[in-house]
Amino acid sequence: MIFLNQQRAVDENVNYKRNSFTGTAKRKSRLESNKMIMILMLFYLLASAFPVILFYPLSLTTLIAPCVMLSYAICIMNADVNHDVWPCCVVGIIGILIKLGGLIVYLSIFSLKQTDEKFTVRYKSHLDETAAKRLFFFILLALEMGILFLACCFKWHLVAYENNKQKKRTPKGTELI
Image (cartoon, rainbow, N blue to C red; front, side, top):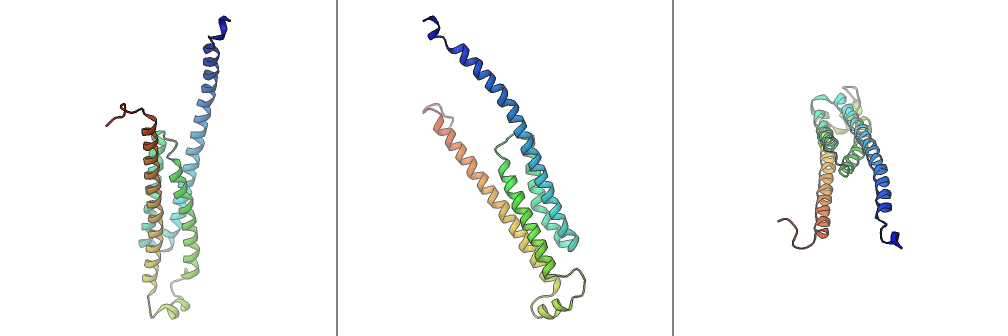
């Protein structure tokens, strides 16, 4: 009968063991997510480097979104915030798909040779080749900036949701104004 009311020692021992295992699991999970982010961002940067080879002066603008996301990913890794990983992953994956799709479309529309008879005959009345390439890279940049904007809006929504959840947890009268 003496030990029925004193079950705290056993509970504290179990909680201590559980917390020691979850601490290493969280570190492993964070390390794996950091590796995944870096691989995605570097592959996104590499996929963005291919258009630079194709049409040099204007295609440098397509490196804006990958550089912004790479700097954001580095800030996340330094801040040790694990729930901010998903915007980088989403933008990285969708950005890679946009870049590879854009590269395929670019190579199917424009040839790598400077003079192409099909292009000059087909599009001479509407646009010249450099104007068409400018339009193509502008559309590609607009797509990437749109995806980056959507990721920022989703992150903003996540922050608002977490703040709302924290307000519901705090008792009335103890919240900070």
